[in-house]
Image 1 (cartoon, rainbow, N blue to C red):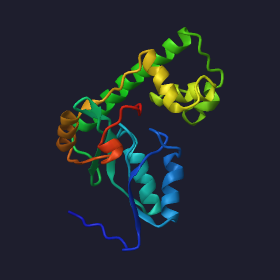
Image 2 (cartoon, helix red, strand yellow):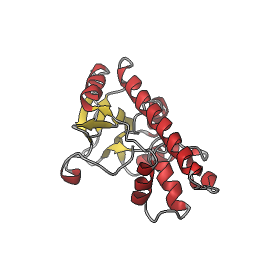
Image 3 (cartoon, one colour):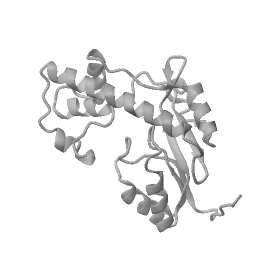
Image 4 (cartoon, helix red, strand yellow):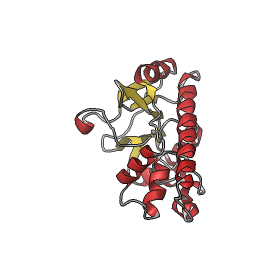
Length: 210
């Protein structure tokens, strides 16, 4: 087992997101920024995907930042949201974690499109969709996209209100049972941590879409 040694003054961030989930930067923007701001170890924990691990690790190697294998799984515990961070050294082993993440993403996307069609059927129009979602080529990728479109087109005054409207037309929070997620992570050689301890009195969210 190789041991990574870094300066005691180096910065570390183990929960970062890119445009591949709910972040604002591409990996090619994020990793160089980390490098120039003294970060030497980091983890890109995009939600429910490990598809871009090779890309971020290659960028990390290029810029002198060690990128752990990581993802943040959307999970549920006793009927409430309880996201789980998964970390491995250089790579996940096997495909259990990737399979679970892909399933969650697929079901989320199916529901996102169902909600979008329902909104259109009720007369909502989104002529600026290409601009509002320009960072993802105008495409719907995550449930929050519908709330963003509603807000940016003036139908609601906040993302929270947009989520409420989404619920009225069929939005469903898609999450893997936490015990299944932890088992898949362990089967893939990952350590697991609760993502947001203390949020809303615990790792609980009735509001945030996936």
